[in-house]
Length: 202
Image 1: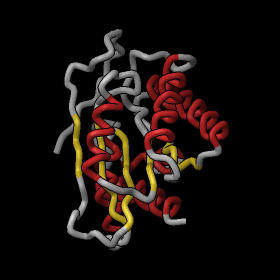
Image 2 (image 1 turned 180 degrees about the vertical axis):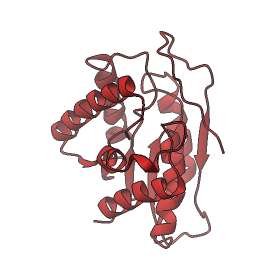
Image 3 (image 1 turned 45 degrees about the horizontal axis):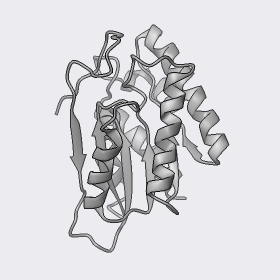
């Protein structure tokens, strides 16, 4: 399975290739707790590993997309997927490797915050975890990733939401990055999944 990553900073809200990757994990396991993992291609690679590491005691359903947080169809698409999911015990949210047309100081955090508001309203009484965006090899983009993560941490404090620090995990082990400098090896996805599972399982 391959995913796109917009390497150029374009001014248009849509990327050259737009995609959604959705997955409902073991719908026949009706007695298990579910985690709705909303993210980008990194979440798609991590989701399955998290389910496996939990021995399927936690089922990680996935809504992965290239849609940035300002995409007008993001919320509607997520709402449709969640309706098919039915129920969930927790939500993990990360969408930081898309939306490079948004500046990091005002636009990105504003739209990110709107998305968090949507999640809280749409899924009341469901614990929400904000996952920090993973490290990338490109130095200029990595600076932007760190700025975005700082804004996410501010939002987490404002809403009293727990952070899952995937950035530290990925930055500490650059050998786990795939050749494209963005995605990960199987071992890399397992390391990210372990961090998510350890945090959410609490």
